[in-house]
Amino acid sequence: MKNTFNVLLLILLCLSCNTTKTEVKKINKRGLISNHGMVVSARVEASQIGVDILKKGGNAFDAMAATGLALAVAYPFAGNLGGGGFMVYRKANGDIGGIDYREKAPLTATKNMYLDENGEVIPNKSTLGSLAVGVPGSIAGIFEVHERFGNLPMKDILEPVIALASKGVVVTKNQANRFNNYQNQFRLVNKDSLLFYKVWKENDTIKYPALAKTLERILKNGKDEFYKGKTAKILVKFLQENGGIITEEDLANYTAKWRTPIAFNYDNLKIISMAPPSSGGICLAQIMKMIEPYDLSKYGANSLKSIQVITEAERRAYADRSYYLGDPDFVSIPTDELISNTYLKSRMSDFSFEKATSSADVSHGNIEVVESNETTHYSIVDQFGNAVSVTTTLNGAYGSKLYCSELGFFLNNEMDDFSSKPGVPNMFGLIGAEANSIAPEKRMLSSMTPTIVEKKGKLFMSVGTPGGSTIITSVLQTILNVHEYNMSMQEAVDAPRFHHQWLPDVIQMEPNSFDKNLIIQLQNKGYIINEKDSPVIGKVDGIMVLTDKTLEGGADHRGDDTAVGF
Ligand code: GLY
View 1 (cartoon, rainbow, N blue to C red):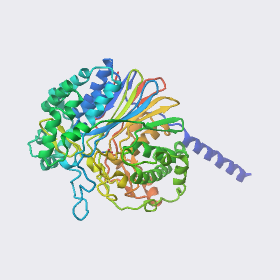
View 2 (cartoon, rainbow, N blue to C red):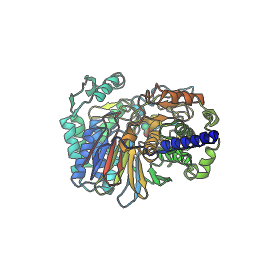
View 3 (cartoon, rainbow, N blue to C red):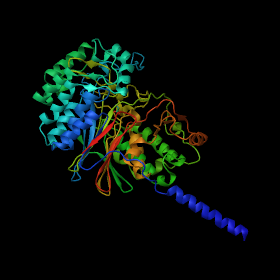
View 4 (tube, rainbow, N blue to C red):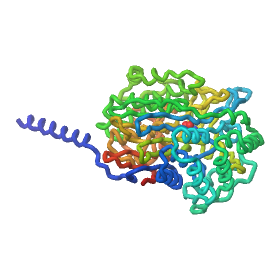
């Protein structure tokens, strides 16, 4: 009898344990709540300019142009005229689409342009200075979006941005540190004396008169000013004087391209993300479909089992990324096969909770990762119900570090996102294969993952992040934090993040953010943990539509990111 009683007690205890585990988590913290429209970006000035455009009657596409251009002024670290990006949109009527304004390789680029006579990669050649620069796409993309979907004249969009450049931008503490940290590289690359050689301190104001003049000419002459006009001529002369190979023909030939996004279902969500040449959409689809059969909400956020399942799916998806993905205008990508349920089920068939899979059993390689947190993302939802998700980049911090003082902007080092030599890692530690080798006018593979999520057929989230190779996994974790673990948008963005990218075979974790016992448990199962090299993983900016139709912003506390709404 006593035994029976004990067994019953045990069963009751176990049941109550399970109930506690699966109990729905309470929301403790919300981000900014707004009723009509919202912009979340890396700088308050850019978010404010975007919201002012919405208040003026502009839509999300007008605000996309304004916010993107304002980031080029307020956030030269990654905001840009000299780089490129991607946007995914969902209109109020449910139409979805994407635009690719990724940089392209110049016409005279060659497959082996970064190799020496022994076939070895020449250090820094694809990352520093003018040979690292791809043909910029940002102005083409912004004008294309505005022309197709904008409501307001370009004058209304550009004037506040020009005013910001003339009036100047207040330096934040983060920004002052960054300017100072990159001094040596600026001096190594540039012949001129730069605006950034001065030691800028927090609360100083930097004015950008040269950039204001460039933007004034763009306002007067449109997109052609950048690609065929005076600006094009100044830019090409500058690049060539610095040993670059971009010509006036390269600029004149550049066009942005509309792309059909990668869209897939996960539970009752529809995820809409960027198609190649970004790897974001396919990789995200692969990972989410591989983890969908597992009961993540029961395992809990950042629990042992959740981390294991997500890591193993990431390992497998990143191995495919390296092999199959590149510019779809140059290589044939088996997208349907890569994201088919049958294939992904078979991909996870050797996963076990008992022991880590070794990346050597998925493919080969032995590399060092150099973590980085460049690029920038912004999310916008307007008062009409349109949503955009935009990620734009110079690639590295301040791109190639080459700054055209006459025009007032940095040039990208996006050529490093090609695989200079298949099998050799780029600055994010990502190994590329033939599909991503260099060819004239080809676009380099990206990890940027601007994403929009629908829930039960309605707009639910706009989300994205910088972070190089960690972009895809940061977007993934933010969506899961909301959907599986019942976090608010702000909590989802703030939660600690981890990352695995197949090679190197380590889980990167934000330092001092994960429980020590959890780390030991993972190590006991064969996972190698690296908490040193990634002080920050991603800097996510997102917007969620709440059940009462208000908008919640999630602005990442890891940066100066700010949500502004009305
Ligand atoms: N340059 C970073 C990316 O495109 O993923």
